[in-house]
Image (tube, rainbow, N blue to C red):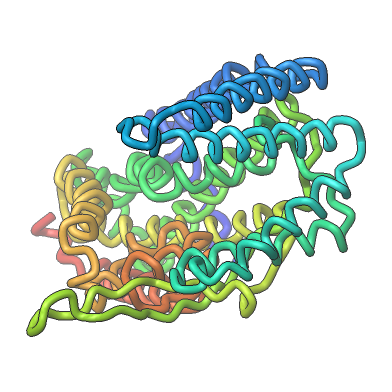
Length: 411
């Protein structure tokens, strides 16, 4: 154990003196700040006209005037006029917007429970509508909305006005946007030359002729790779939390999120002889509702696990290839090419996509049921964990065996 500790410290010092580590950390800081500020500017541009009850009242007043004009036009226009059919749709749209403003007026005035009850009443009316019952997906989505509204009342969670954004919602959005490509690229930058650089710089022979066993050398490098990845992920998420809490405050921690959403797939053949066009129907009544703070905090260890799996796969590439440039290029291809493959193949290759590690780098998506909807087959959080665990075990075993048998004279 003491010897492993010394090996770990030695490999860690090597990593600290490499420019790749600091480039990755610098990019992590810049992107965390840049993305957070970009979303905050969008939020400010959207919210600048709606901050006060007075402005909402002015908006409702203008809508009432427009509704009055439309009703007059509806009564005065000839039904033969081509624009006559548009007026009822315009009236419905204004009524919908007025209802949104009215609910947000109630929220700002402190009567948010009445606003939620009004939303529940509308939801019940929609769910009792025979037309929406025929559209199974729309009905299921509205049912999920109703379940979340009931949850908010029970948990006494005050909703935010529609133009406001909480720090939790922003962090969840940023995690989704960065887990698939940005964080993996940073891991590639850090880890892709962990082994191959020894060959590139000619230090591999000095490393392998030491009295320490090769497996101890390999596992010390592996542990350093995992440690650096852990620092990167924790640093990135900590920075996101800190910046967005400063920008938005701490409200909205108990907004409900539906996880473990099961799907069924329904549809009929469009033309005789052709395969059926399936539609993914979510079942929110069978899902689990958790507060968004718990969803995000659970995402941290899940992201750690997925990025550590990726670091292990990249370490395998670095072990197999002698050149740092080649191992980096192959590692980048392993991250980018499968994602292009997923987009091109789509539902047709769902059995292959399910086994790609890149399809599970954002395990929070698995938890939400997003791959299940896209691939038209139920892919759970546990499925993603099993696939990543398989790739991690496979990569570390192959890399360890190859490194242990590596021929020194030919490197």
